[in-house]
Length: 401
Image (cartoon, rainbow, N blue to C red; front, side, top):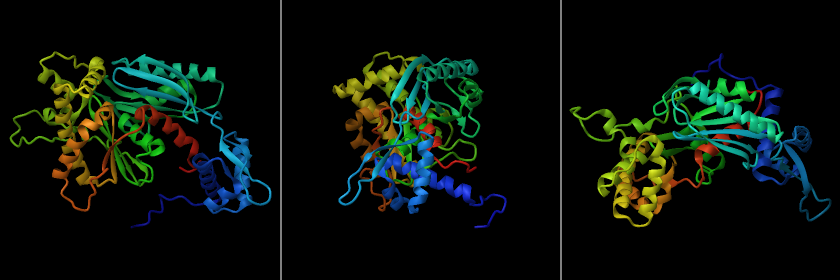
């Protein structure tokens, strides 16, 4: 690999201390309560260096001395824990029909929460409202806000927080980051909802624990994918990585069908399940964005009650879900694929169909199909992804470009 002298970071003392500070802070986060001696062994730093960093973190209010730990000889060591109330995080979790606004602490506890209607059309006005509401709720909590995470069902530039396009809500070129930062006066991170789900899995999900490479698939009105490579979210050159929902999975070499009708998300999403159920049952079901979430939940509840039309709709969608997953796996070869969305409530109904489909479509003997595809155990991957964006800012190394 050619060395690029214009794109490297000199590891001076400040950068090394920043890295060590981040390592110590994250060990306390993951292993606490933990003593300074134990931290020293884990990070490979001398005890005075660890003590200096710990004192800095205590001074910032991020860490506190909890109690004396266990020791078979001598004086019992003082253990350290994260001060969960030291910072608060703002959350803006946008779905196509409603938006959850919340203030949480570093323990992910929700301190304040409001749900508002997602307003299509004027994105600037809507996100101004979201920013003002977050600022008001944060003011009532009284703690320092570390940042705000925004999860939105749209094509988003993660670097400048601009929505390129939101198909359903008709938002184009909306600078969400700038709008919300103008209200909350702190850093705002904006991600596409599927990528937010992948960040949540990386930070909080047990399914992704210990994995280096995985994909998170969010099945909702459409289908989105968040890719994690070497434990980092992959965005692509234009923040468009993961748009697998638009892959064509039906054969039409003569172009007799519209490309949209052959998209993966039009064959395996919540919307496709609701439409199939309406067709098979002969019942008219509302399929606008306003009703799709409620109708999808109704279909799942019916399927869990052994309604034959609902079961058929879910199982047929899972066949198409398997086709898209097999295509994606052949190109990416992730260690695991995690599924999020309402459909995971019916995992016991669809998992065998999905596994059977993957056995047919993934020919490589090296791939262990058992537990290759698993449901997310997170209660709300997009909400928790917005939380994780702020945690990422709190716990990562500082002063590194």
